[in-house]
Image (tube, rainbow, N blue to C red; front, side, top):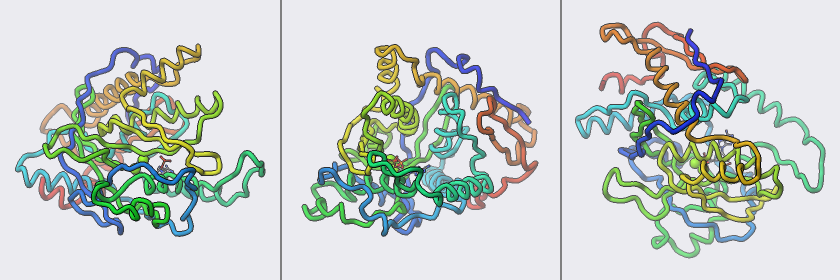
Length: 373
Ligand code: A3P
Ligand code: MG
Ligand code: MG
């Protein structure tokens, strides 16, 4: 086993390592039954909600929820990459291929996130945390309080999907009827359909290929491949009414920023909601201004800076350099086969990396990908 020290974080302070602008080179979609298609059919267009004070709980009873208990590994991402390589007759040059979500949680947010432990893509671990969450959900609400309503976590997570349904259209505005636009509040909410962007990006000396869901496009996707796309990330968050709320929101902004930064999403639209799940206001936030603004606000209120974006980038660059050096033998004839696990125990100051299988690819790489490669 090898381990990478997270602390002291100040090792990663200072000017950021170079970062490449993420460029989409392919995409794929899941349709309304979560069936994969190597095209952009599930792309959606941003169009702000029309109904004032919309109730984000409306339709929870008919939520068409994707069952994510099965492990999908990297299958769809690798399928999209294979198709792209076959079309272009060229192999992608990334040293790291992963989901954007993995990169956010496991690597970039780590210097400021010591509460979550994880063994990503380790199914037993995920099942155990799900059982824990279910046990929590079945507990009675803490203590009824008129100003502090309590909603089960699954309702609160529905609010996010409901907001997406209220804020997007399946086609550009000009192709929609007024009834369709105004009828969004009554639509069945589903999280089965997704559009996923696949980008080439770089952090420090690492070239990455990342796949991740994008919620909507602001206007249209440019016809020229590789041009910046005006993506919109949609988020809900509790309305900010106290300094404590602001502090909480600014900590959430770390994940919002990393998530959008990694795919080159320039705008985040936050739907602020009341404690009762009513949409109270929208705010458009420019992704690139987030780290600077968080620091500026801290300075102006004489409070400690909650997080630093450059530190996240430098941490990710250093960790990936180390990971590659650890896993890949410099001897080109050496056997670099096998399956490794990346692990961080809750609160641990280290990330651990160890080989769990000496040979093979576990079930991580599908045959279609291996045969092509
Ligand atoms: P919010 O982010 O508005 O809460 P994303 O913003 O990443 O596209 O995710 C869309 C929605 O999925 C989230 O909306 C939230 O409702 C739900 N969601 C995402 N991750 C979740 C998690 N770990 N637990 C519960 N719900 C989650
Ligand atoms: Mg999303
Ligand atoms: Mg979103």
